Amino acid sequence: MPGFGVALHVLVVLTGAMAVGWAGGRLARLLKQPSVIGEIGGGLAVLPLIALLDREWADWLVPAGVTPFLQQIAHAGLALFLLGIGAELRRTRGAAAPGGSGWVAAGAVVPSLIGGIGVGVVLLPDSGSAVQAAAFLLFIAVAFVVTALPVLVRVLDACRLRGTAVGKAALGVAVLTDLVSWCGLTFALAMVDGAGRGWGWTLLAVVVAGCGGVGVNRLARAPWSRELCERMPRLSAVVLAVVVVSLAELSSAAGLTGVLVAIVLGYAISSGASDRGPAAVADRVAAIGRHTIPVYFVVTGLTLSLPGTVGVAWGLTAALFALLVLTKTGGTYAGARLARWPTPDARRLAVLMNTRGLTEVVLLQVGLVAGLINDTIFLAFLMASLAATACTAPLLGLINRRGLRAPG
Image 1 (cartoon, rainbow, N blue to C red):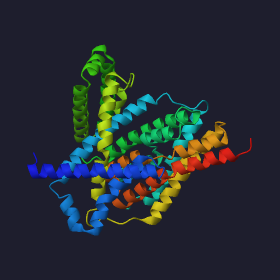
Image 2: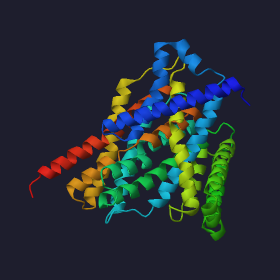
Image 3: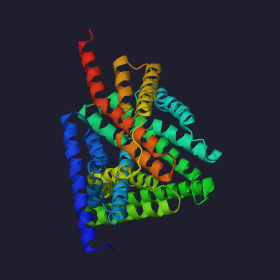
Image 4: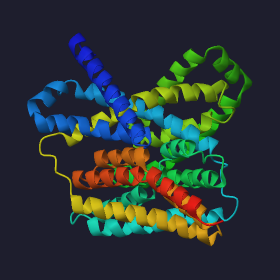
């Protein structure tokens, strides 16, 4: 247990991290961007900037004795936030394009996978085994496929597109890409598992997680469970939060990423109406994660502020930005046109699928910690992904303005 001084220091840093996230979100909204862009950028940049100005000040602000507690809090907040992503996946699972959704989904996934594998071949480290090389290629391919569902939902709401055919198609395809991304990440981590447990253990863990999700879903549907959650929502939220964080930690110790477990739980629980019962409790818990997620960004930024951290590879960042945008938007647009979507709607859908943001940051951080990628690739992907996400709102505005000027 930390002493009073360490606990106070942790509390001050947590308060500062959430304040940075709030300020970044406000600035992003002023710039007509999703608030999460500012939260991510502010959280990641604040400690590296302080370290650049004064290394000793940065070390005093977040000393070595405080860092482990911040990391634990950040991982707990991330698990609670991912519970909300699972719930969002559940609620949007039925969203689909009015026609030709298979073409749209294939366009959003296949070119990105191919592009990611191609980039992975170019960036493949010289050293390492064949299994490590395969894990690296799989991870880079998954990083190309990502569409950030939480950010996409907020963009759709801001642009009043959520109930339209474009919005429904975007959500449906985003659910698919998120499932591909998280499952791909799980198997990439299994391939480089230092404990040597390998594929068999991971497959078993995935099956157990799936069966557990089915059990949780049946439990959430039980009348007594709904009644308990409605009568004691705060106590139910505390119990659920403890369960989610504990299971995420246990699964990480067992070799299965806690990311997948938290998402499975959120998906399983949010099976009913979102305004009552277990689903409402899950939303309450996910809101806690949403408010504490800036701490995760600050902790991630802490790794970038350490002495010896490499600088930004601007050429690689620019190339990744171009390829991320080209493969995702180009593939989605081609799929939508093959499905006979009107050109303006196909363009809107292609731009929306390039929303990466938060999901990409989480995936990259997991890959960095697991040793799948190095600092240089992490930074390049991170900056390219944030830039691609920041382009979403301006490009949608441009498409809408062009549509208004079009004859007829």
